[in-house]
Structure formats: structure tokens, C-alpha cells
Image (cartoon, rainbow, N blue to C red; front, side, top):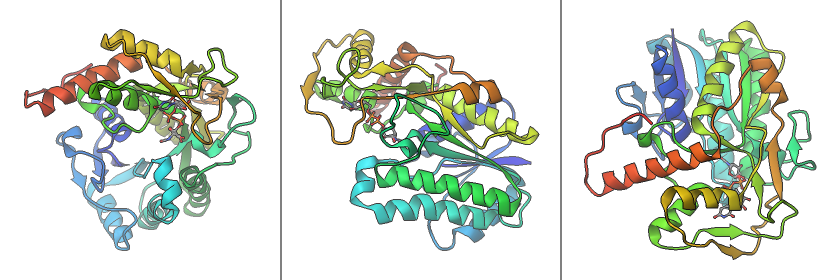
Length: 334
Ligand code: WQD
């Protein structure tokens, strides 16, 4: 009996994988390696499959049979909001089409548990600053739409295939559980700010005139190790049966852009003052998770705060920089 992790070579997937391995679970990865990296997964078997390709259901079924898979954690997806606006067809094909193929591959197999990687992007610009799972889902970009459509498909598959499923709505994921598993793509606030420092530029603040404590945007930053742990808790919870099938995964506490950047200044020793620009289109002032449901039903709570996220992200950055400079870097523990 083993667990299939799709997207296991990615930033979040590799953390999930390491936690599963650490507790002794058998695992197998499916990843198309478009952004994933094999060196993140060590000796875990990895089958290179693009889930959106026409032949993927057969290949998935073969992997399930060959490895005795009974549970799936599905993280493989595209996640760039801007790109999704430019290429909605690509995002729907990859994220929704890939998920549809995954369920076609699962049909008729012993798989009975499924964890889906969803996103706070399903809420769009929430009406209230703290968001609950039962609040309106109104994504404001195709990326968020594909995650919401994914949740619907997961629910439909749960009914038709008789499997137990759960969707985890990630808030703003940051940090690294191990220095070799950092988020190497500068796509979010912290990774963009680190990349700016690396180039000798100033980090950028997209607007300081929001109705927040210091005028900058407030988000719920959750450490990737805490998020990864939530997958294991959700998977285990499914075995017993859960009351709900959608959970926010955040800390329940917001941090502003200024707070994150101040922490980065402290940790990096780089005191370049951030540059203020206009607001980015579509950015809400505040998005923070209400974590009542996951706390009560799964007894999960984030253990790490902003300092830990920024410190570990910076360590991972230094680890990567040393590797790029040709210095051998061992995958040590954080
Ligand atoms: C955070 C805050 C920015 C960069 C997005 C997606 C979401 C999810 C996570 C998925 C905001 C501000 C940012 C910068 C800044 N996606 N900012 N300067 O927009 O909350 O969420 O990523 O996988 O679906 O929408 O995250 O990190 O881009 O921004 O001031 O250089 O930082 O305005 O307030 P966001 P983010």
C-alpha cells in the first residue's frame, strides 16, 4: 500500500513527500518535471507523466497497479496567476484537464483517499478580511477558477467513485523545511524580495495606501512545513471520515508586506529600503484565513510564524546560491 504524490518534485510536494517518508510511508511520485526537480525527491520513484496528456489515464492506472497505490495527494498544477490570465486555455487544460485524467486513471483501482491542493484564490477578493470555507467563492482569475472547478470535480469524483476526498485551500505559502527544498521561483512577495536583494535592487511594495495597519497588503503566510503537515493530517482524517471536504490552511493571523520585508532586512542584513509603487491590479487589502474548521476537525494548527518563514527561506536561498557557485551543498535538515 503506497501513497501517490503528484507534483512531488515541486516546492510544496517535496515537503509533503519528505514528511511521508520520515514517518515510514511508501510513496511514489508522478511529476512532469516542468518546474519540479528530481534532486528534491532523493530515491523516491518518480514517473514522468504530464497529467494533461491524452495517454495519461492509462499510465496513471499502470503506476497505481505497479506500486499498490491506495491514496493520492494531488499537487501537480500550474500556479502563476498572471500566466493564467494570458493563457486561460492552457491553465484549464493543465489544472482541470490534468485532474480529470487523474480520476480516469483512478477509476476501477483500489484508491480510496484523495487530497487536493486548492487555493485561497477560490475566494477572489473576499468581502470580509477573515475568510471562512462557507463564504462565497468568486475567483478573479483563471488560476483561481481552475482550483474551484477542481474542487467541484473532486467532489463529483468522491460521489461517483465512492472515494473519500478533501480539498485544502492554501493561503500564502512561504519558507522551507529544509535548505534544499526552498521555493526557487520568484513569484510571490518573499521570493521576489529575495530575488531583488540578490540583484542589488530594492524590494517593491505594491501600494501603501490600503486600509490596513501600515497601509500595505495583509496576507496569511503559512510555513510550507506546517502546510505539508496538514496534508498528512487530512489524509489520516479521511480514513476515519470527515464532516467537511474543504479546509482553509493558514495561520489565522495576517502579516503586512512591510512586516515581511522588515523581517527579511533583519535576517539578511541587507537594509535596502523598499520602493513603493502603485497597487497591483486586483490585490485585496486583507486576506486572512478563518481556521476554526481545520483546528476543530483535524486538530491542525500552524506551529511556525513569520520569523521562521523568512529565516528558512533566506537559508534556502543561500543554500541555492552556494550550489550555483559550484560549492557542494548537502541536503541538510533545517
Ligand atoms: C502578497 C502581498 C502583494 C510582491 C497569490 C495568488 C494566490 C496564491 C498565492 C498560488 C500582496 C504584495 C507582492 C511584491 C508586494 N497563488 N507584494 N511586492 O497575491 O496574496 O496571492 O499567491 O499558488 O492565488 O493570488 O501573493 O505573494 O503575490 O502577494 O508588495 O513584489 O505582497 O500586493 O499584498 P497573493 P503575493
